[in-house]
Length: 115
Length: 112
Image (tube, rainbow over all chains, first blue to last red; front, side, top):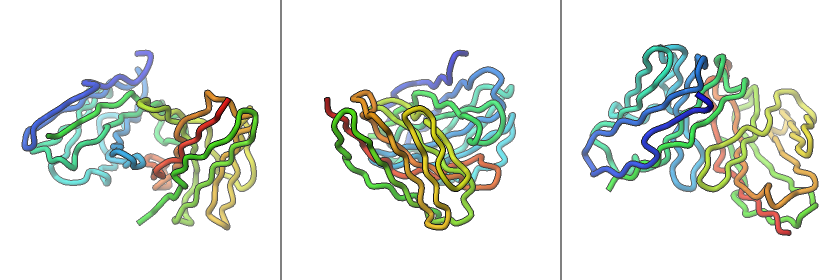
């Protein structure tokens, strides 16, 4: 596609429910990244995919968070048993080759609100 | 804990002036340094990155890196109202550059 696409753009969920956030990277981009941006905070790294593998999951905050990538394309970030502190904008980025040193393009994000 | 610090601002400059945005980082081993621009409600856009000490210029933007002082800055010359945004400083968290540590950002306001 023309850019990184994320869906939904907004999601309101009740505390305790599971949510799935989707990212469609730029076609051909092998590297994919998930970040979280809480209100008034900087972006926090969550996970990095190279192809369908996740060599770096160090930023996932708890075992309630998981992510997968299939077909070296679409990625899904799943948050189980959501908590209010999970409220944030979840941003996905992709790059042609690994490393943010090459230009990584961000999607518009999914704004998650847990009530 | 690796950290990136920025003054949250707002930094207010008149149109045509030079805006100077500053950033310090805690990890001496950091390799590459990035400046992103983020308009309100939008996703971050890469302005430029730098990995060698000294200055790197791209149009109206100049990034300056001083590894000894663990300091990186962004100068915007001839500031325009369209430059009003939050500027995020980021550094690589690992050698592969596959994760970045971001500062909280500095809000810049350019008045016409």
